[in-house]
Picture 1 (cartoon, protein in one colour):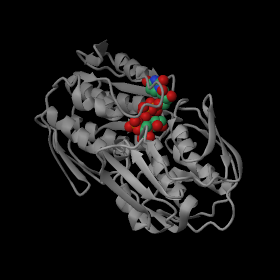
Picture 2 (picture 1 turned 30 degrees about the horizontal axis):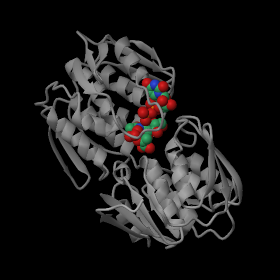
Picture 3 (picture 1 turned 30 degrees about the vertical axis):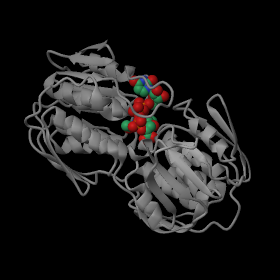
Length: 423
Ligand SMILES: CC(=O)N[C@H]1[C@@H](OP(=O)(O)OP(=O)(O)OC[C@H]2O[C@@H](n3ccc(=O)[nH]c3=O)[C@H](O)[C@@H]2O)O[C@H](CO)[C@@H](O)[C@@H]1O
Ligand SMILES: C=C(OP(=O)(O)O)C(=O)O
């Protein structure tokens, strides 16, 4: 079993470069299925989700190379091979294989997705969208069967502004006949990134990044080259780490607009921040951090994906903070782990109540999900003594080169294989 071992209280200083966005990459890679020739994507992060998607594309006959962050996918020999089990279960974003394969082949069999368990994560809005486009969708033994004689553009109102449903419907609708209108669409930057790739492949999409997206279907999509946007969640994670234990950290390759709500919240806590055009500098903090209340919201609000690392920062703030997750009400497994590290925190419904400041203490803890893992890495950086994090595969699904990046800033973290656990 592989674990991270962190020796705490080493301060961070220097510059860290943010990788391409995970939540874009995991949609851009399946989007290539829709092209009739090679698609090259630059800036793919070195995360296990990217490798799993590469394997999935290869399973259906794609020829894929992935080196130095550049993935080139030749989709010309792909077939509608059923994928009821196996790699699809390893990540959430395998659900994008549904929209992309439906768009290209008018059929697909895809096992229900895996990914982080954050409470129930239904895909009813994805299915509602596919059905509106004319597909028959059935769930048989844990796999979704999709089939359509033809896809016909439709008006689809999403009951919740779901990132996954918005992108998935877009993937199918670019090859439907006529116009599709997605209302109450999600507005996250990754949706714009996927629409940009599809547009460069020949799709006709208007309004991505707003709540109404209009798509006029086309007969064929061609290959192209695309550079992915920076990962706003990784950038946010480093911003939070720098606020907690930095002696002056520059976070490079950020679109400051994408992290505006976090910048505002950190400033409310008393964090000094200097924003540049494509970078953010967080100097050494010289005053106490103040407790604040946080509510996660859809973009441009504070992302649910940074709620868990933010909770750790709040253990260092003076006073009582409340963190309410309105997107995933059960995304609080990290709180139990933080309590093992001496955090004064409890969960009531969809809210964590955190009392600070506390001196965190190194302990053996488990990354229950991806961002819980990032939160525990931060807790380990702050804590007195050594922290051992188990189940790090969750972390490596979404952060590329995290250890290397943090060690370059002065952290002391090792990835070790251990045989017995002491937990
Ligand atoms: C691979 C990827 O991009 N993952 C991100 C994506 O997940 P994901 O696309 O799964 O998240 P959604 O935006 O779809 O989910 C938002 C909310 O809508 C609900 N919902 C969603 C779909 C549906 O059909 N029915 C339904 O009820 C969910 O339970 C949740 O409460 O957006 C989340 C919210 O920003 C992020 O935390 C994830 O990092
Ligand atoms: C929840 C996340 O990922 P996924 O949707 O891939 O499980 C995340 O990136 O925080």
